Amino acid sequence: MQRKLRIYYTSDTHGFFSPIDCATGGSVDSGLANCMSNFQHSGNTLVIDGGDTLQGSPFTYWLYSQHRDGDCVPARLLNLGGYDFITLGNHDFNYGKAEIERFLDALGAKCLCANVEGIRGVEKSAVITLENGLRIGLTGIVTHYVNHWETPDNLFGIKIGDTFSAAKSALDELKAQNVDLTVCIYHGGFENDIATGKLLSATGENQGWRICQELDFDVLLCAHQHIPVENLCVNGTYTCQPPDKARQYITMDVTVDDRGKVSSRSRLCDAGCAPLPAAMEYLAPLERETAQWLDTPVGHLDTPLLPEPPLEMAAHGSLIANFFNQVQLEASGADISSASLANTVKGFEQDVTIRDVVSTYIFPNTLVTLRVDRRVLKSALERCAEYFTLGKDGLEVSETFLHPIAQHFNYDYFAGVSAVFDLRRPVGERVVSIKCRGAELAEDKSLTLCMNNYRASGAGGYEVYRECEVVREQPTEISELIIEYIDRHRNITVDKTKWLEIVQ
Image (cartoon, rainbow, N blue to C red; front, side):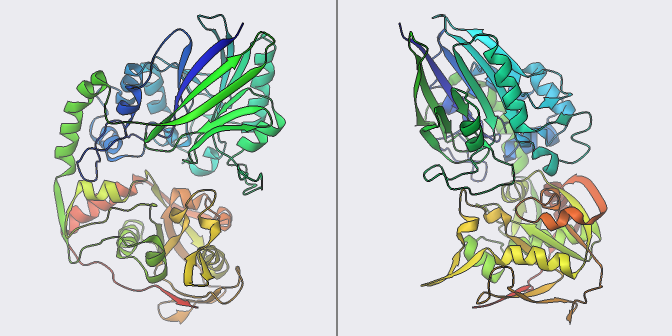
């Protein structure tokens, strides 16, 4: 006799709950409310989320800056969608332990995260029996790279252990309970190319491929990379991954036959254009409040700051990045600054609203100032120079920054130092000049460099920063610093310096 399980799986929704584009105010065919309207619940279904729910949109920025005393909106929404299990994503730690516990206290679903200790409401594993008698063992894990990215204050009282070893221990415990099917919800992705198996990264941030090769979960639900993956089987483990911002969800149908053999098929499903009525009824008044707040005028710029294609901005400079660096330099008092841009950037018209700010600087980053010298700067700038390659038609973005995902956000724009990249030279030897205040920077000269806390952790290929002295950490989110800067200055002249020269 065959017994079947249907899984509805979302992940990396990043606060995109309703079908409203916060950058424009218009409707879009995405959002968690739209995904949830497609879930058909029964005694043989599970609804699961893979984390990164609490952060990532202007709406969640409003929730945590203006609406902290109200309902825990993300929990209330997942309850309306009938979620059974979740795990935590790395960005769910961005608001600290108390906010995670508030979320879990209000959540009807169980939170499984076997490598996390110290958070009330987090369990290592669970065993459930479906209506058809199928006995399922589930666990969850989050990438341990949270320890590199997150601020110490947000991790106070929390311990995040090694991802792989926690998954192995949980699997052993589940097998001892004679389950028919094992499921791992993993907030992490694939370190290997899923088509060829070629190793792409050995950092340990993503270990999905290793888990499939060395452990024998029946189902591995991946997340974190925002790469849409459906109907993939690696070494006998059925795996998949939805994209970010609730554009799509996964439907996975799993069958266990009378001999215990597992088979499965998963598919990516569009969110659609029909939101769950109960979700929209709940969200509508909150969205109206958010819209009013977002459209509050803050100040005036002397020029529009509009995005161009990422390659153009990286090669020729971006006034958006110059402006972010301008804010960071004043807030930190550092000598020099670096900033990065999201893969997709809204930009600013001359009259700036809060909507412009939180839609253009979308990360919940804080500011960190490090002490650096020429060696450190050269290493960081060489990583930036690696962004470029010379193709037959001219300048192109290198494969390193495009696969396994587009990583334009890992290219940094500097202010306070002028650099020259000679792209005719090999990678690692392209930075031929670093000048500060018009003079070539001496080897023994020490400078203070401010950047976001994500980059200061060494993430994105900037490991050299991990060895630097931390001069100052500022807990205020950079988006708030931008709002405060505009509000304080009102009429702003944007730095128009071209800090980079490229030779090709």
